Amino acid sequence: MSDLKDGNGPALRNESLGRTVSMNLISAGVKFGLTYSLFHNNSTFIHLAGDLCHMHKRVFLLFALIVLVAAGVLAQTKTETKKEKTMNPAVIMKTSLGTIKIELFQDSAPITVKNFLSYVDDKFYDSTVFHRVIKTFMIQGGGFQASNPIKQKTTKAAIVNESANGLKNDRGTIAMARTSDPNSATSQFFINVVDNKILNRREGDAGYAVFGKVIEGMDVVDKIRDVQTGKSGVIANAGGQGQQTTFSDVPQTAVVVESVRQAPAHK
Image 1: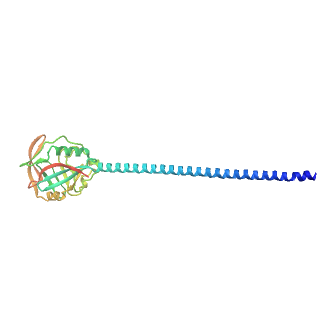
Image 2: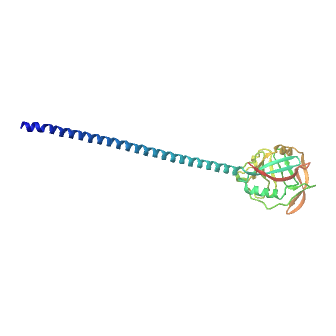
């Protein structure tokens, strides 16, 4: 029994040792495998995270580019809109006392501006006079030709009164002259030499339609307002026929509008 025991003892120890070594090797292999797998998976995760990061960067850059382009387009649109709004027509009025440049507000008074420019293009105002000048009020012209006596010209049809456009009869503005009929303006205009609130539209009074303002030559306007005036014989249209009559506030020395021409649009 002892020999059997002694004989089997080393064999059992070797077998146990072999199992231990095998288990250790297996354990080491598993650990290596897990370590490699973990490293590999971590590496894959890192690469995946890097790809996602790059993708996010690309998306962000693309979004930023879209925002910049949209902002640029919007800014350009606003600029173009602003340019369109500020590109008003203008005219150069040459008179015997100097030159006046007038900006016309076509957005606020489209009918009046179109009407005025139609007379300009027809050279209707050439060789006309300022036939009514009141130093503390306004200077009026656009209806009588420079002759002796001055003679009223035939005009086109009257236009609607655009005095409800919000523009005020302040110093330096140009407005349409008319009769007591609010919608009777044709060719005659006046330039305010003071602020004339009484001419603005208000309850019970249609007012006078402002359609532009003097932007150069206000000194010339003041020269005209300072001329000597008095009563003078004129030939005015009455019922379609010229009749001799007398006007007050007529310049004693004619102030002639030599020409009125369209100028480059005012910015």
